[in-house]
Length: 182
Image 1 (cartoon, rainbow, N blue to C red):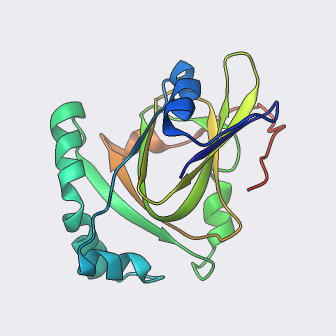
Image 2 (cartoon, rainbow, N blue to C red):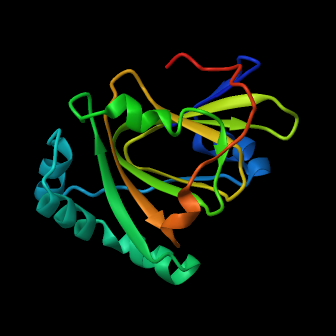
């Protein structure tokens, strides 16, 4: 279950409350079940996946991609699998741990593990959203945010693209004042 922590100490864990507080930023959050097919669950429970296993898992969850293709023009998707054994994990994550924006929406569907999106609000306040498995987020182009993993350093997430060039981070100079304890 997602948890939203505001800089003022307020915490929300109901989807309805969280979406209300994310709405001014244009951020959309939803719950997308992965289903209960044994092969899907087996792939999700594996700490690492081979390229053929990634392709199989993507295919098993492609009904969401097909919906995004029709409704919003998404063209591609990939599956990122990160865990403490991922080579150069800290270097890879450092690109997203500073406040930045993108020219395109950042759309992720967390299917295993957890991650944290931080946001800069219009009034300058900050908040962090901890996402868990079966949660979908759409961070609109231009929204100032950052991302980091929880202490487990484990996530499997499908990323959806209208084009990959739009995902290049444009760093801002905003300091992060607030990191919620997870």
